[in-house]
Image (tube, one colour):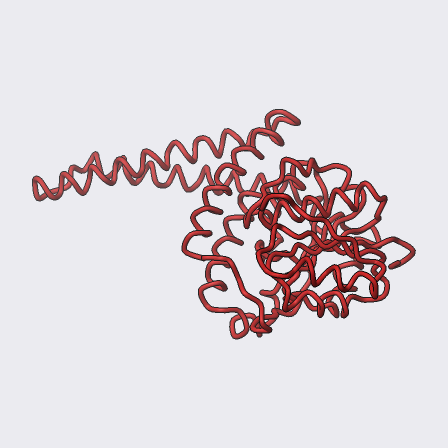
Length: 316
């Protein structure tokens, strides 16, 4: 237990036969339960876990009958923690990329009631750029910016970090069967937490790479997949939070920003077409394009400002 509260470690596993023993063996003693979710591994992950169970009585194995992705494995672990009355659940990857020494810092804001959900931020440290592979660092930074707009948590960065702690209230509030099941799970859960007005905080953690793990992430594919997911989640949050549950005029600002943004693209396209065909730019067309651009910028920036104000009480 940590501060008299029970802690469950949710550990999604997919082909982690070389890493999982270290993850289990280095788990801090105050963690009350280790729930390992095998997502239909094709190696000896299950057999390895079963050999560990006699020596580690806290270990529970959940086996999926079909591959659900990392989000699906986390959802299974969260449901186990919820149904077994755990006070907090921490997600730690089965590949050993999450340093157990960082766990107390993640647990503290949740255990003391300051936050409902805490997440690791690998970008706080000056070592991040050197330790994280460059393409993943840049991709993560871009997705973090987009996730701020989508989720409403403007103070949160490193959106792709999976090192997280969640409390009992959030475990019982979120519908885990609806959470996105693939690599966009960290983005999806932030949006769902925001709609429920739950407090989220960042905690600096150490980036851990090149310890024998094998990443299944293909950045050039994932960034477009998650980008499309973020677009859908943005509109879903606007509908759920600012129209259905409680109306806020910022939806009009975002709508007008999007409308004038579309007009800007069309008007500037016409400017370049006319320039190419006639050799000159119609003044009224250029003015209209600039007016549309300024309107799109102002409406969008005001909408973001209103969103920040509406969510400032969720900042820890």
